[in-house]
Figure (cartoon, rainbow, N blue to C red):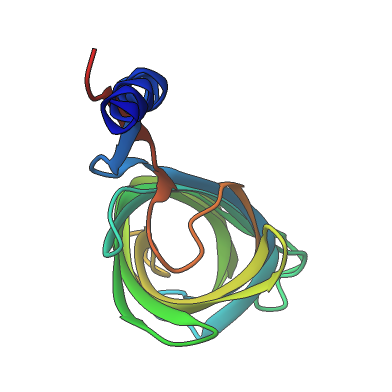
Length: 215
């Protein structure tokens, strides 16, 4: 009788504990794109048709959205300037707006490499020496840039991004005819991560769901 009574009391006391047991299991990870903005220094080596190269320097600002560990998209605004083009006494500049995909090629412990292909528009304001002095003016045409780079985190949300590009624009030669320009660009940016991704490519938000067992 005592054993039966003890058994019943045990069920009464322990039963509610089982009824309140909660089982927590992970659910699939939810991801949102990672974002960053950057600003930095731009060196631009511009090839003037029928003349030699001209060096320009300026600033570049960009924004990037990373969708997967491998794929991102970027948009950039680029301005470079030279105060005396080819000894003509005239200033010149390059103004460009570009956008396009970014593909991350490899990942290492402290840096990763990438390539990008950008399209947009470029305005070239420059001067060309001629037999009668010089020709000065500006040309605005569709442009594109193809390049590779490296990105390395520094501290907290700050990183540095360096890349080099082949950049195609257009300008006039000494006869006034518009022709293509084959340019070279080097960019060094400080990157500020708004939604941090590190080297993983997505800002992960992990949740759990609970299910009550019993009644």
